[in-house]
Length: 297
Ligand SMILES: Nc1ncnc2c1ncn2[C@@H]1O[C@H](COP(=O)(O)OP(=O)(O)OP(=O)(O)O)[C@@H](O)[C@H]1O
Ligand SMILES: [Mg+2]
Image (cartoon, rainbow, N blue to C red):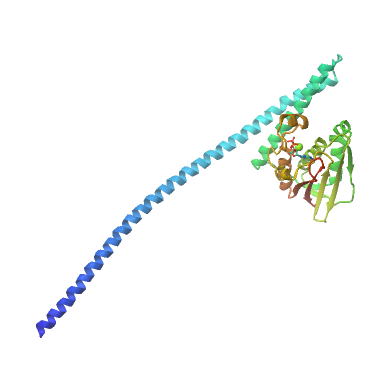
């Protein structure tokens, strides 16, 4: 009996041992698999780290190149301005202060030189503004501004002769409006572009109306013309860089612009915490450009 019980216990011990060894083997195998997986993980991790550092250095190189490009644009624009201003001044003197009478042809050539130089100076100024805006180097110095007097200044001084040449009538709807908070130089730049566009795209004998709305928090200024207008499908791309609607050379030559003015105007207005938008009844139905600025407290 004792032998039988001993054999029975031995059998149980052997069975337990068998299962124990089997389990230990399984665990060992699992462990090995885990080690392989951990090694693979470490490898993938290392590859990721390598890719990340490659991307970081590529990104840095791109940023350096971008800065170089901005510096290049900014320096060349700046350097170009001085000789171009001299060309403009001498062309103006040749046209208006010549001590010998000019032949009709010579007068025509000098007028063309003046107009082309004017366009180049505008383009260079636009490029400088864009370079400053895109590198966040533009400084906004807000002050309390009387919108009506700045508009009067632009209509009476900046665009008086251009409007007279095209027989365009300016109507300034004066009304009591609060002063706005804006940088006077930047606001002038925006108005010069918007009013300049209205003049450029108006037909001879047309009318340009400038007016205001206010709700006490913001003042909206609108510039409305009766000119060539803008198709619905084009309204969305007016404020993009080089957003000219007609890219043909003839149109460029006749309307004289590079398509940067509205892009710059939008950026400047947004930097002054305002908004700008455009509306038009369609082609040949005129256009209205409106921008808002916060009321000065
Ligand atoms: N009042 C307007 N009437 C009709 N089209 C307009 C008017 N204002 C702007 N546009 C359209 O929007 C385009 C972009 O205007 P934007 O002021 O940006 O450029 P531009 O006047 O052509 O050149 P720039 O202002 O750089 O000298 C113009 O070329 C024109 O096609
Ligand atoms: Mg313009």
